[in-house]
Image (cartoon, helix red, strand yellow):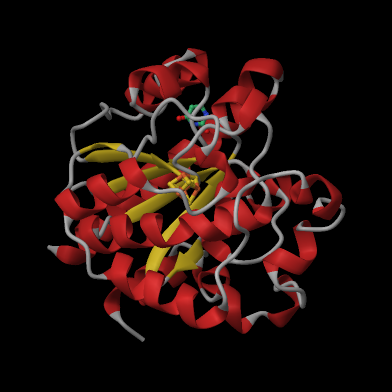
Amino acid sequence: MTRRESILKEMGLAPLWRLRERPELVSPLAPLARRGEGGEGQRQDHPHPGPLPPAGEETRKQRIAALGWDGLKAAVADCRDCRLCEQRKQAVLGVGDVDADWLFVGEGPGAEEDERGEPFVGQAGQLLDAMLAAIGLQRGRKVYIGNVVKCRPPGNRTPEADETAACFPYLQRQIELIRPKLIVALGKPAAETLLDTEVKVGASRGRLFDYRGIPLIVTYHPAYLLRSLPEKAKAWEDLCLARRTMKELNDVAR
Ligand code: URA
Ligand code: SF4
């Protein structure tokens, strides 16, 4: 057991650290099969060329996995690899400190983000900024903010599974470049994409999950909190857990 793991165990968080060793938490269905149902009829109306064959997809993932920040910015700005490219004004890669300790991951750009090219600048973003401030954080200072899809889903609908799958290599590369100490998944699409399993946010709060060795906390999306004020108290608890976890991780590193 590493020192970090033993600290987490002392915090009573270790059993959940190993999500993939708990088969009962892992959906037997791949994300595409699980959430892609019922969209086929709609999809045929789109001129977009559909998913790449497996070999092409592998090459694409490898190409993205080798990009630096400039390459990522350019690739995302020009990307047409899912149907969300069709109605976007611009793709929104993310914002913040490329050496961030904290990574917050939302769902996808809304109207204002699509307009301005920065994540979380609308109403939900104001709440996110307030949530960050509540735990002594500020956008851009050891904090990076991104989304699971980089292009605005029309009408702010939830991104579909094939869209999050197409866009995920970009987020994976961002995480590799940033190497955050802690990831906070804001809402279900972010949590499901990062953990590659079905997630119920309410049931996943208060636990520490694992994204490739990086602790990950799941909480409500700020847009949901705007509609459901009682859940704000729970989000506050989640942020306190996040802050406590970061403190422990920093103590271990000393
Ligand atoms: N909601 C999100 O999930 N992301 C944004 O960038 C804005 C609103
Ligand atoms: Fe490309 Fe992602 Fe935009 Fe889809 S959402 S077009 S994969 S950048």
